[in-house]
Image (cartoon, rainbow, N blue to C red; front, side, top):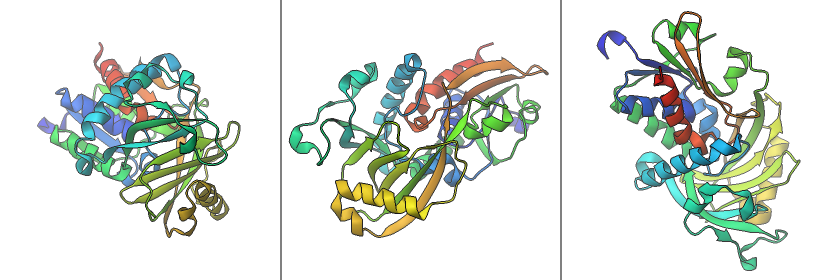
Amino acid sequence: MDGGKRDVLVVGGGVIGLTTAVVLAEDGHRVGLWTRDPLGRTTSAVAGALFWPYRIEPEAEVGAWLERSLSQYEQLARRPDETGVRIVPGLMTDTPMTDLGSWAARVPGLRQARGEELPAGFGQALRATVPLIDMPVHLRYLKERLRAAGGTVERRTVTGFEEPAELAPVVVDCTGIGARVLMADASLYPVRGQVVVVENPGIDEWFVASLPGSADMTYVMPQPYGVLLGGTATEHSWDLRPDPAEAEAIVARCARIHPALAGARVLEHRVGLRPARPRVRLEAETLPRGARLVHNYGHGGAGVTVAWGCARDAARLALDS
């Protein structure tokens, strides 16, 4: 990039920031991305990363984001080793078909599960074949794709958006839970998620169950590196330390679905903070010195699911003068 000048600086190195930066760079703009944390230590790196809307509003806009993102992930799934995206079948329990939006019509083979397909104790589920993403691989892929398009990635910590605004006329805020402090956004709060990664005893389908009103969830996500078991959804908790009791409970819940998991060797414990908000903040404002600031944060537990759709809308806002 000539003289290090940028048309846009994206702040935030999770899946939302990287995807937004890729869209802008591939549209021909000079893009830099600043990330406080290494990509492997962002909240996105911890995600179960099943393509399914979870804790995200507004419903009227989510449908379009989902459809655009699904199309992108289907293309990326043609090269799973490179992109980390695979198309995997599984069961989503206690979710009526009528609760889904128009995006569901694009999911091939989506149907009610038959009785013999349901684990004991479950009376209803949807059977679906959707993208499941290996996030460490996918984040590296996005980083390399950004660089291939002429973008740069730099480790930088900011205390506000004035600093990047001095270096680029457009700044995109993809700081996730960090926006609570950076934007003094009290409506943004963490939803703590803990997961356990174990060796795969032969599971090749995903499974999700959640109990309304409970912080406990049960999900099983077969990944190339093992099986990711979840999980928790503890609101307003900032604790990034794995809780041994929670980990034990997670494995026990998942073992009721797949008994072989009870004896599987534990490989890793992970904790992340989902950036929850009454609705995604996707809008632009003008900073005091004239730079354009675009916000793209507050995606709850669906950041991976809507990343490409939100990135396209954020890019449009960034360049709409």
